[in-house]
Length: 374
Image (tube, rainbow, N blue to C red; front, side):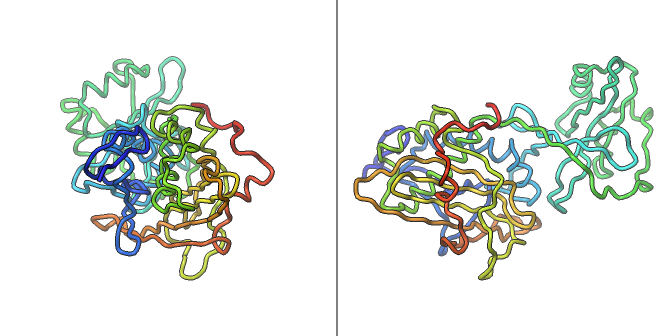
């Protein structure tokens, strides 16, 4: 059997690598006893290149924060995972979350603890810029050496003998002492047992998002459409050439294909579908005019952080048909589990899903929409 790639149109005589509908980095989900995988439409080269887009989605944006909070491990569970609050290869800068602890006057760096889901202080160095008095915050991790840390501090304005503070957990205190070696006796450690519990801290998050993030979102929607073949759609249809070129090569304006809105897809809980469980929701609406999808990642408990609306393309056939489909990818594993686990639950319109077509009743999606700049 000859397999042809939907993106680059290259063919080969053996199945392609497995491609998950929901990236494996976001959990492992079984549907009727098996994972949602296609291996006949995305070649290995395109699959590998697109993994960089999925990497930014999993490590560089809001999804990275929620993924760490919930404790999703992804594939290769035995391998050490990058902490997006320190550094990672998929983003130019780590996620920066700052906030001021109660009774403090200067900000600190924070991260999300997967054990509790709460914000905790990140291991970091803080100092006041000697000229501007601006607070400088620099993450510290075990990959750093003394010289590399001091060099980074100097790049941010620190000068020799200028005082600085080190924030670290008790369990990491030993390697901080080792990091500074001969200077360790000059460090004055402050016992934090007298500090009040953190409680609520107003934090601000700063992260770098590029077009790769939206390409990964569009890829999820397009792969979902190809897997379930709504109205017989295969993905090779000419009308989907623009979304394919955007996903594979980044051609076109991201906001013409993917738009972020502050709406929740799942608006009614019932039939055992509990909002206390985290998960992802994907819907697709094939109408006589167009093919539209919605994706909400890590919804549940506090609900989601909004929905992505994806313009996949125009209706491809002369014979008019319509179909609306949706699934909830429910996360069942706990942080303490060694591997991810989850299930795929069908959620049919209109009982559980507000179809995307209702959102576009008075607005054309394909017009450029203001959003963050890329």
